[in-house]
Image (cartoon, rainbow over all chains, first blue to last red; front, side, top):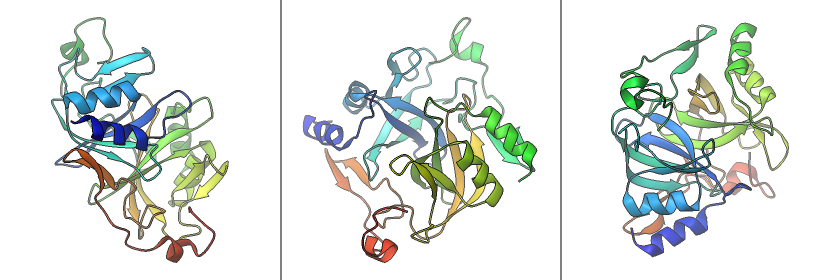
Length: 137
Length: 137
């Protein structure tokens, strides 16, 4: 990614009072919405530079290189900016699963027949993803 | 929607300090991500009760019944909650266009060939959607 494109993207984004913008990750071929996380300027810059998605973890207050611990990397295929510049859409190639619970997508609970039910099972166990003692990554 | 399901959804949502949660709207059949907006408890409750998507407008500080002005209504097909309960995914049937610019999706700017470019044209003009003097709805 050249610097001009990165500058143009950063200029188009309306970061919030915390310097963050929500980013939706969508699997590029199936269209499945995988997760939503947050990015700061540094995360956007690194993601465009490396082609591997890097978020900002609000709970850990630092950069979160998706898959660094779990191996479940997201390869960026295209970055889109919405009309108001306050949301990003990342078209990605998700390696393995996106959710820390071991499910492909984080959106595995749905209202069906008048109840909130689980509609997808874990494909791998969190222990396989993180070993003991981790919960995210 | 029965009250039990609404209560279960509200209990599963982690509203932020402003009492809001981000909601992604996705066209139910094509998988196209249309927009991201925000909901409060009242918007979630009304959306589940009526089957028509109602957001909370942060700029107008009130309920935003999508399509009320423009006619571009979103019919809810399924509501999903993510693993942490801090994002909603709405599978919708979008009537007309989702974006106030007259485009089908709000995500019409993309990084391609090293530049941020528009990848979709308006299908209708904002004037057709809102008449004079409006910008959203």
